[in-house]
Length: 586
Image (tube, rainbow, N blue to C red; front, side, top):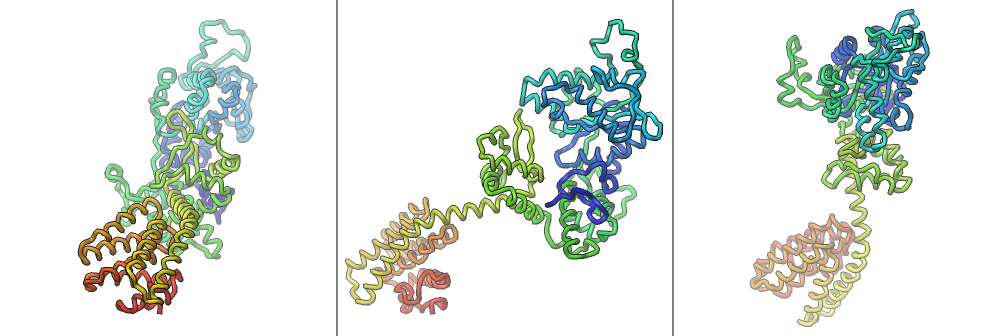
């Protein structure tokens, strides 16, 4: 399995799963992004973090930002909108419970009760503070991971709109420091619960989401003006950052040449605009090529995990150049797919190959609601593949869709499609082969009779030709059978030996071209037998048929090699008088 549950000095890369807080000592390559995100969080109540799927937003926050927040007087509270909104309860109460749980996790003590009707009232209450184990006041950072789920839940269930509105208004009250509407203009009771510090801002909010939802988030500015002010877009790694991921986490496990080769094998050259934006000030010329690479962090982590596993299996102290050259990244993903899909079960194999990838290798956005019509084995298998990172659920066009998670997984799926197609063709051809074999046996029987009795009457020749033609057409896979019938008509209508030779050559080549598309191996032999009959019948100019005879020799030699015909068959013996029997039939 390409994922490590617990990281260590000997297993420092997580593979398919994101980094966690406990993995912070193994998280490298994002130092500049961590510093930027930390500075934005420190100075602003609201920070937006967005980027393409798979670039590591969750890893950046949990393994990169969170440990540094604690040193700045903050502690993280991780929130998922779907969990807050799907249960039909009060999402604000769900956030407050999460704050209370996070305080316990980080050994932070609250000076007051968590009983509050809104987030603003909880955090602005004069008597309410958070203290850490070192007797310092600390503040919570509400991290709404996958914030796009707010819009997805609304698309999925319009009845969730009131709860979504309550959640968004609560966030707006915090980051805009706006008194809740129900408290404005009323006389508040003289009690601790209603004594508020209007100037305090001992909290922060981070909204993390996929960048294709940026327009949706910006539309919230009517109630949340701050959404247009403080953004950080997460980009892929460059080659230098990729090398930091490899050598920073791997330390002595990877030598420098192997690290550079590994990053180069995973990365690809940046586009023109990206290259123009590269700041090469102070860059060592030897590292210049690395800065021109774009590296997907998820792919890099998987490849590092795989190669490290191979290192451990072989008992090697380091990942060296020879180990990096062992397999290409696409081969590693192929191996992982085959393992994951085999363990998920055959029904889900067929579902993925038939429903999630087209024959030309395009990913399909499959409606999740359509899974209800699938057998339980398929639904269970899909859940396994989502956990393993092979499949993912995404929202598109107002509907949750299922898709293959990465382009590198398309190759093994297409290979599986081709294998399945060959198997289907084999089963279909078995029936056709039985018919063709019977006809072929009849043709050879007639031919054998003619050769042994030496009675080559016109009637017998006509019978042999008609039978062979019928066998050829019957044994062809549809729709090529109609093409074969047309070519046979061309042989009949040819007026000269040269034209007939060309028409016979076309018959031979069509049969040979279909040899690998069907298990009806009699096709080339039937074509050769038909060509033999026609040459015998119209052999006014033997030189005109030389190319056809050479083709027949090759076909019959291949048939003998595959044990599809025997050296004493009439069609083979016929070649004795026309240039000799093929070596394979001797």
